[in-house]
Length: 165
Image (cartoon, rainbow, N blue to C red):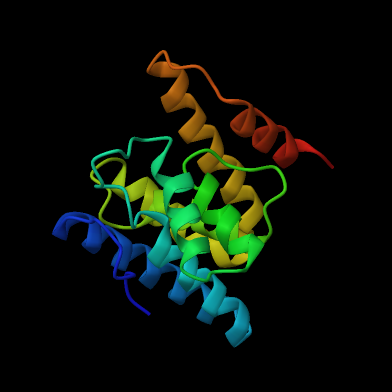
């Protein structure tokens, strides 16, 4: 799979998307994920930032924009669409595709910050996915708080869902 023809992505963004897809593929192999589930993960990877560089896109709108466009283009899997729609925010009712995309988007090796910590976290995902998911969510939420931005309801609900027994 590759980017859809309607994507608006710079070469740098395309490289990021490729690294996300590669990381998800590595985890799918390590976890012996069935082919159909692996395909869902990879569709979400290729779609998640497909409109990140579109003129009307911003940090919070590019996911919903891409999910809407993917649905119009024929993507029917609600889990894939929710993964794409909420990949920047988190979502309390995600299935595995959303959780894995959230992790890969943050932990892909091209991110310019905390590379060693990200590498260590990424290596732990196949054996400790839920613990790493809580750690990554905490890091992402801390960045939002440190930036002085409000936490949106989806992120708060996602965090609370990670703490529920």
